Image 1: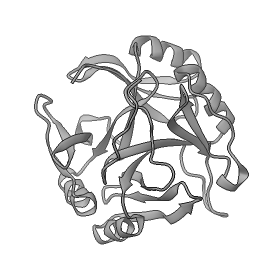
Image 2: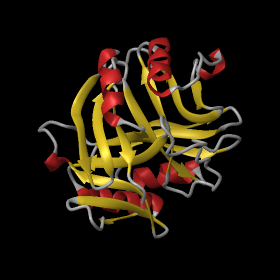
Image 3: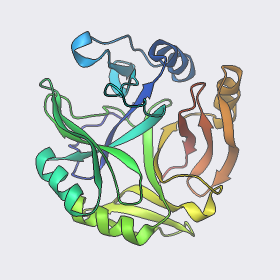
Length: 259
């Protein structure tokens, strides 16, 4: 299993989590689909569950929550980008035209987090590691393998992520119309133009989980109440599909080709 041993660099996707209306149903669904293990977490952390794959942290699942009098957020997967300084990152988000949705907070001794939106409206988290660095496995069946930003304004996104994380967004070689999210000269994510997606699709970060057989995985997902939004198809990086779980959370599955 490809264990993650190198530290996450600032700006790199390091964790994903799902806030679900029915947390137990989500835990059961992803256990059956991907083989994750997880149970309702302690009350002091809002019941948040760190799910594992063969004993290694792979993703989080918690209950949707909102301040009193506010509507609950949509059920969605959230990509979290790493930082060395959560407070500095929050200031940089504001100065670069982003919006702070959940200010920096301590999560026990595990780390510090915040939820923000870039100027185009794409929501993501920022994580400063304490005792917990993030996903401990990558690329195995059921594990996080890729994240990309889908936006309707690539120049605005480029300026924002450069200011906050020193990221560079540039065309990806061999993938026409698709861009690389580069950090320190390495491609650690992607950027896609919403012009190529159905009208009305909002800007967002999309989570990709590796699977051995996308067709079989999508069949299983549909039988368990999920939806195939984009059925399995072949593309430059492998065979993939975009799906939604039974509560509406959108994500992608992919059988990646060797880089």
